Every structure is written in C-alpha cells, then in structure tokens.
Length: 232
Image (cartoon, rainbow, N blue to C red; front, side):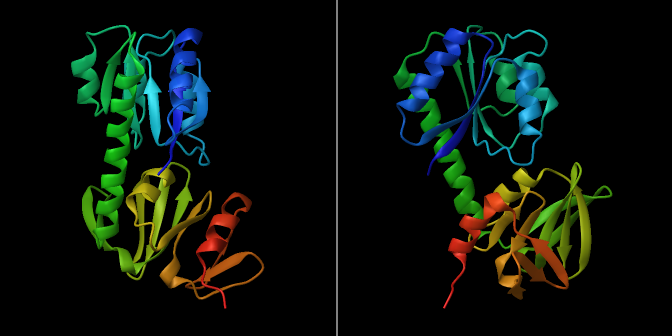
C-alpha cells in the first residue's frame, strides 16, 4: 500500500532532506509540505485532506510540534523529526509512531516509515475482521453492528451514523471514521458521505439511493467508486 505523507518543519533544509527520503521510498507519496504547524492543522481540518503519515518537527515558532499533537485527535501515524532529544517521553505519550533525532540517515528514516506502514496495515486487517463498532453518544458507549449501518454523514465537527435502529451523532472526523470501517463494503463517495455498499438500492443521475436518501457522488470519488461496482 502507498502512504500519503505530510512534512511539517520550519527549516527548509530539514524539509528538503525528508522530502528526498520520501521520494526514494516507493510506498511513500508526499501530499503536503508545511513550514509551520498552524498550516498543517488547517490542512488536516479540510475533509478532502488524505494524510496517512506525518513527519513532524518539534521546535517551531507560533505552534510547536507538541502543541500540534495536543491540538488534534490524530488518526495519522506520526513520526517526530527533531534536533531535541528531551521531548521523546511526552511525544510517545501522545501516541507517536517513532522519534527521530536530527541528523538521521535514510536507514533510520526507512525503519520508522516501515513501522508506520505496518501499523496501518495491521489496523486495516483488524477492521476487515470486525463486525461492530462502539461510539460515544451522550456519555454512553453504544454498540453498532456494521451490517446495520446505511451510511455515515458529516455534520460540522460531528458525524451521523444512520442505522436500522436510528441515528447516532458522534464527535469525530469523517477521515477517522473512514479508517475505522472495513473497506470491503464501506466506501467514501462524497466529502460528506460514507455508504454501506451492501445497502445500495440503486443509482440514478450520479446519486446513490439508500433507505429513502439520495446521496450525491462527489467528482473526486466517482472513479474509485464506480470501479467497485459489479456492472453487467
């Protein structure tokens, strides 16, 4: 699998080195290059931002790497790249994947990147085997059977699970939900919608009909989604 990457570092030379390492690694794809953490936060808040792995510096002006980690509930793998050694414990408390101290060689970079790739692939395998998901609604953990989900809809900083049993509103990101659902029968078809492909009744005029709801197919999702359908 290929991982979409973001590099966050205020030093041009450091970004250039990481960029070159990414270019030399066939399973990595550079999506975003940010000179500060504020820019990175703004990008990650966009629904279309598809980032699997972040290479993050720590000591940056305006917003440090540690402040960045505290400001987001990240679903991405994060590899710290820094000249400072004394933030390692706090960084690992924020569930970073690895901690690289500058200057580091390509071999060390590759080892950390492979670890991130292995983590993502392990999560994907786990998701494919799961049959239910627990979501927090009104201070309660509610079990939802995946087969009962019609679709998931974005609502500002929340998502709505529309199921056989009703609707459940959860404070989460669409990107995070997309990573938690089995890709074998859940598909992102729009920046605001993930559908259960087993629940599709029909398609008409680039819209999916599920349980009385007409769901648009976004232009950027159309090709991938149509390839999944079994046309006669």
